[in-house]
Length: 183
Image 1 (tube, rainbow, N blue to C red):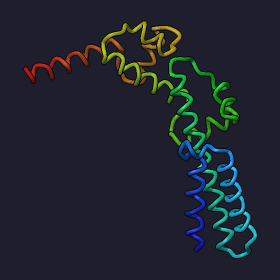
Image 2 (image 1 turned 90 degrees about the horizontal axis):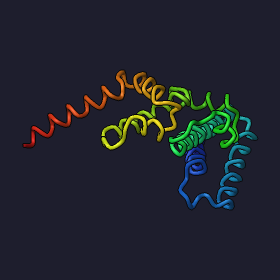
Image 3 (image 1 turned 135 degrees about the vertical axis):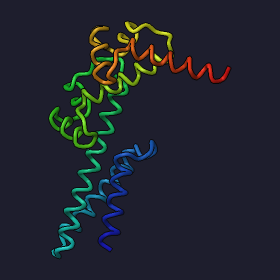
Image 4 (image 1 turned 180 degrees about the vertical axis):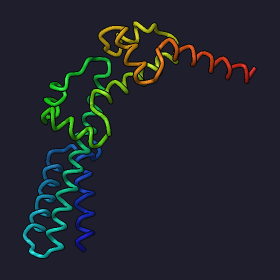
């Protein structure tokens, strides 16, 4: 029974943190929080060893769910600000957590720092824009909020192991090979 309660708690916590749009209703969220708090309180009141362990697991599960929520919100924030230069101060203020907390949680859940992840997203988008072949490297650099084309090139090379020019040449070589296969 205890394990079933723990599973219910985990599922409810997930819905609370990542539920669909209809779950954004304050009354539904408030009711869910109330149920979760009651559940934790009941576990805390019991004296048995299993119940204490279950409470610790439930607390750990709630913390993990909250950390996942913060990680998701950081990723979402970064995607929305992909064309800008993001400050960790602005990001942490928008989430309502300290910079250190945001950095710690993100690194634990993603395996890399926020800025490294943000640069990775930017370079992935740059690669997509280079593949389309319609924009200059300067324009791509500006669109993605890099301070200069030179800095863009350095970050690109650090992420991919090649310059944007080398990447574009490689892509055109591959597309030429593929085109010759179908002629």
